[in-house]
Picture (tube, rainbow over the protein chains, first blue to last red):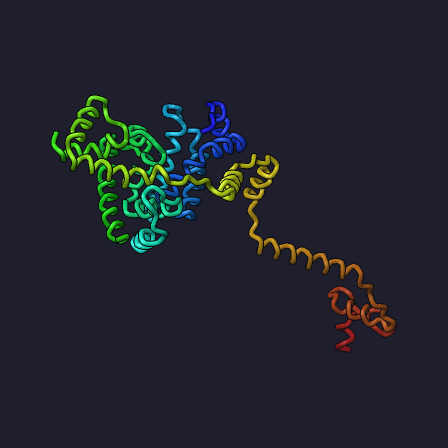
Length: 183
Length: 161
């Protein structure tokens, strides 16, 4: 992430669009990534990203510099993405799950294609609820520590552990299903 | 620690590198001596962690920024125009219903047109003197026949005589 100085934040908080664009360019990558992985749909991810940055634009003047800007934006993103995912119907989820697992070429373990890996990731995330999905994405894709995830989601660190544990147990059970389909 | 507790740590702190060095050492020792936990650790890492480490990262399309910018610009407030505000307050103070205003205008115009019409009309010339006579008849004081030679001076006397 490019260096966002306090001066840039103050300017953007005052309505300076150029300063705000600087913040956008520096942070939109991880915002969109988290949104996409939690809502599991590109169009929805674009909508969530817009919602996040409009919230940032409107609420930046209330940012108190008590946490880092990145943590704050992660929090806004996670909340927006989880709420959006919960609102969206889950009816299509199970149909896509089967397609994602069974479609694609059969690759050797050491030579998994990017495309196949994407299908696997999508299928795995689809099997989780939005809260678990957010924890897995922030930990395994974004690389946040347990404490950073707790700060971003506004939950206790043990709740982070609990959600990760349940999520990974679900993923392990998914593996059994994948193995069964491949055989 | 038993296998159940070890596997709980394998699924969370151990696999994520969040474990305290002292506890990590204990887990390492257990895994080295336990086939089930060793296989569990390998499966958990391969299934629940590695696919995400290889996941692609994406950037939003430029249109997303254009939409955000457009909305942000639309929401920025325009400074108020003092003159426009003044006229706004005046129009609120002098509130005249439009239908009544229109009626008043029509009435005024009708009166003006009527007045102009009277001024432009010329009086007719009466060659027989009839108008003068009729006017005199209507006048209770004047006597239209008072000037005749045989008259006794009053119309009453003429009537009875």
